[in-house]
Length: 243
Image (cartoon, rainbow, N blue to C red; front, side, top):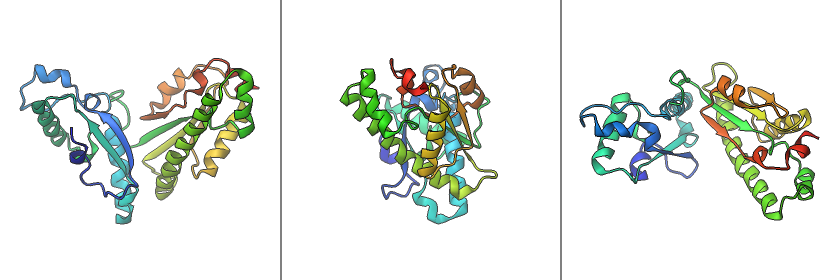
């Protein structure tokens, strides 16, 4: 699907926070083979996420028209879809009241009036000295450079989310942010919080798991977006983070 079509209604100045979502996430495309073309497609796994993003954009524009440059842009990816399926996708989007620029359930009960963002903070909480110490744990220079690049990428995302969040204030915000450190000690979690504040984001809540499973927290929060740096999945890093 041509990204130009899905980018309508977003002011194009290069500052939009762009997210790519598969059309298979927006709708259940398997039903295309059993439903007539005139029927709206069933909602897919990412539908609640898109509605939550739409809520944030609408609230931002409601505060000021100047916020056109401070919006999410979700690009629908569907190059593998046949033309008649693409038409069915657009018709279904109109049926559900989703603008073409914002095409794109986790759990059926997941919130659609608040966008929940969860940051996995083990990498965020690592200082520059700790990054260097990773070499003593068997990580290569390439690994460390990748970690640094991932942290910088995350910083850009956090800055934008923080800017959006400050527009809404603390009460009734359509943006809810959380921090979770999986392996890190309380010091690592505190360092991650301090780093996020330095980047302009005050998270709404933080969880220091210190090696406990993250499944219950994820089930409780049901975040739409999980920024997972993957550091806690790598062998050998747990002793460093928990020390």
